[in-house]
Length: 305
Image (cartoon, rainbow, N blue to C red):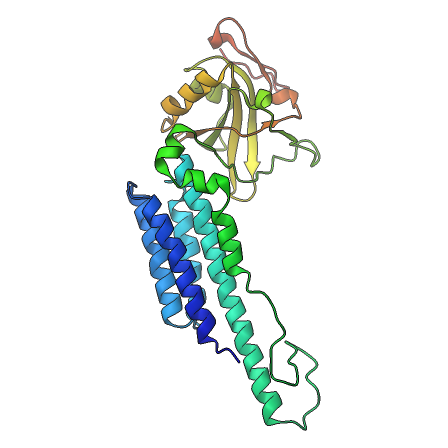
């Protein structure tokens, strides 16, 4: 029977090979990139060198914390977002590898007990072991999952800084809107017409008012529509989706307004990959000839002076 150390060695070789690919594609990177990659390599080395021992759980938990710590520093470019997606997938795969090895060791223990006590009753719980002492086949999917993540065209493109700079493709994590429409909001439209001139605004404090957000966004051009506030339940923060009159204005807004401060928070703008189809009249703005006079249709009679 294959020992527990053999799959551990295989995991080490495969995962380290993948990590090496990432490091080659990120030669010209900033400090947060390097820090995250170094932490991934250190955790991988420690976990595998101890043969996925009991301390591996805490190391993997620490890696999750590291990813959370650097996320705010890596949300301003497509390459950075792709690295965050890979780091999370990498950590999940490492955790799954640990789980499968522990299961394999449990099976080994069951085999030993079956061989040493042929008169004992049949094993009725836990992993089933055949009379020949073999564990039922179960595909080790960790490496498959990792290579599947690496083969994603978006990840491949964004892991190349030069390619990402010329044709960025953003993957926005799933969001949940505030429950203003009884769970039906939002429905998303990914068509080119719907996303024309659209940007996502991140880093907004919950206390931001619509007039304050409009004042910031209208520094670049006319705001056609605005969805705010939208609550991201997975991260516990708020974001907005804004539509300018053209893609050119949206790109300029992303470059100029990213890093601006609102209530002491730095805001980040990304090109939106979707637009919300459901229209809440409290969140729709109509453009006028003078952008300072944009009207906000609001049930609370808020307006922009």
